[in-house]
Length: 120
Image 1 (cartoon, rainbow, N blue to C red):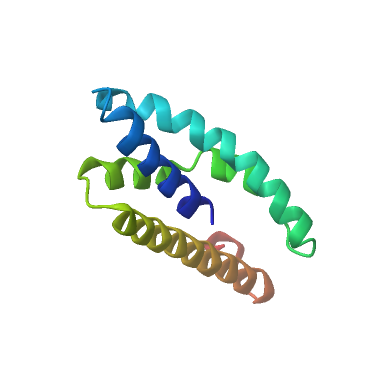
Image 2: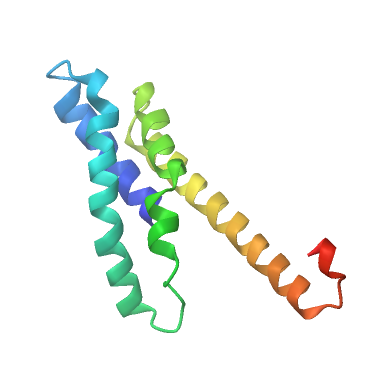
């Protein structure tokens, strides 16, 4: 959800604000504050909507996530349209979710099984 929202908003900012004013060299300085400003409200909404899921450690993880910023920068590099940006953002978000799920499952399996301490 975060990557999709930031991707679409970043594309709109780039297409309608930065390109007409010839300020494309300032993309990083525009997209970074937008990313930071959208993370906190989105986490609050998700905490209210899904109270059973743990969102405690996600703030630093998402704040330091260079993938969010990278998706916006890659998607706005070549103006291929809003649909391309939405697909790129959605795919990156799903890939990030998959990696987090796999690592969470791996940590759970390591904690549940009798694995020697040096291999944990």
